[in-house]
Length: 118
Length: 111
Image (cartoon, rainbow over all chains, first blue to last red; front, side):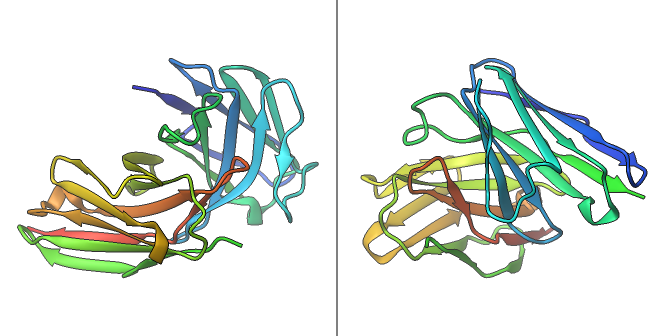
């Protein structure tokens, strides 16, 4: 089955530093990847949609200069949290889907990244 | 604007019980609905996908139904086991690359 690998699973960083999270589709080409943020005991909040080779589409209220998304290849998307603050501490999850499969196929998720900013 | 609600928010049952989790959505114009399982600190695992033209899907002890006209889906878990303890989320896909997630039901099955 389709596998999405997300790395790292946990990261602790100091305020003001930047952190990069990787999301890879291991056995399929993901033309579209999604980045979500999840607060404790809350549902998933879509942050942005990234399409291979083009700029990401950010949801309202998400700062694109703070959460940099790059989708340079069909198997890799990265989320960089720049100048991290403690309020950026959260659980970040990526998901992926191959082109044209949204209506007919399940969405595949990575295992998430727990970010703690001290 | 599509809104997805899940009831109950939390559920605790003894092992062996059959149980039903509910998901409701406000806009019936959906392409599909998916049920996911999330273990603590982990990502989501897809359990069942129901197309808008389908009424139900089954996988092992799980059965999901969809009533698009009334904006409802249920996830039925038969003979629950402690290993079923997790958070269950439903999500609807209405197009434009967006999945809208419910707030989840936290299930605890007691041994």
